Amino acid sequence: MSTTILIVDDNEDIRYTLNEICKFANYNVIEASTGRQAADLCKKMAPDLVLLDYHMPNWDGLKTTKEIRLYNQRIPIIILTVDERQEIANRFLNAGATDFALKPIKAPDLLSRIRINLKISKLTEDRNSVYVDKGINQATLMSIKNYLVTQKSPSTINEIQQNLPIAYQTVHRYLNYLEGKGEVEVISHYGKKGRPKNMYKFV
Image 1 (spheres, one colour):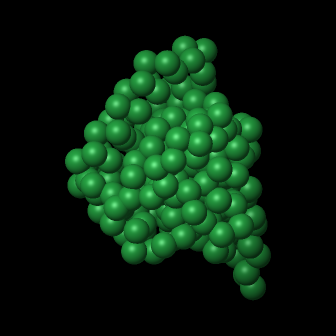
Image 2 (tube, helix red, strand yellow):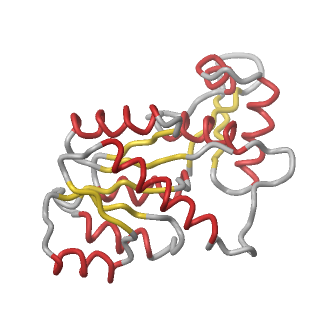
Image 3 (spheres, one colour):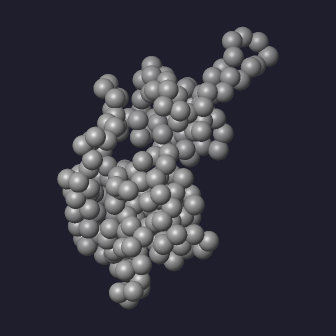
């Protein structure tokens, strides 16, 4: 099963570097440039781990950690910071962070921390948690969700299928699955003639 990492940093260059490191290790990646966006993506995309910058405008890393922990107690959160003070570390640990990586980021160290945190998370995962339904592939599901969440306007099945290496029937089945879970809204678009065209967007 594929692993998805959420990268959160207001610096585009740093996001690019972290993205390359994670993709080198064959992780799927989603990105957020603000803490508020990160919290929203955590709800919608349910990533396996969060790489979170400390110093960001509006919602800093501490605020973002607290917001994520309001509805997700399990996901590992690794804080990226140049600040080595113990008092800062204590504040983050009390807020729910699980680990720290010092900037400038060193790829071997970061990947080691990611692997350890993912392993611990899997070992401590609540056995009563809801697993993906039978017949639904997690990687395919994440691909479709990742596409939809990056679109500014609703998409048709054809548009999704053309942008992803997934068959039309498969896209349709997964969209029905997401609609049933209340994660996707179906919008009927009426043209000048013919049957209405269904379009899909995240709720």
